[in-house]
Image (cartoon, rainbow, N blue to C red; front, side, top):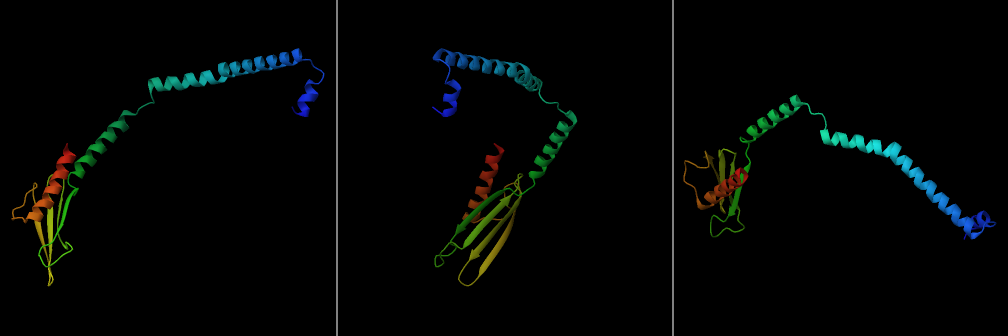
Length: 159
């Protein structure tokens, strides 16, 4: 062992060394018990009391929070939140799916549908109004597909 240990235990016999170790262990246990009884136990009990009763709740602020949440939820119904997008080839001689149909609707099913038809000579864009997930104009297959995607998103959110 180390020189310090040798000088400490140099004149002691084996029985005395064991006695010193036992007394040291007993003193350590007594110190831990006193700490637990005097310091840790009161802290744990006071923490347990607040968990049982819970924190103090201000019912006015809780009601205010509920009202604000309801107002936000009502406002989001009018936001454009469901989108359907389809890319396609409008003509056989034009590749890369440069034409598209885009439908954007809110929670009530109101919104718009934009179609862009790309050809080699020109690009044409069309817009159609959507009311309650329906249009008053005829839709192409791609426009119908874009609107169906937006409607399926709205149905998933409602569930």
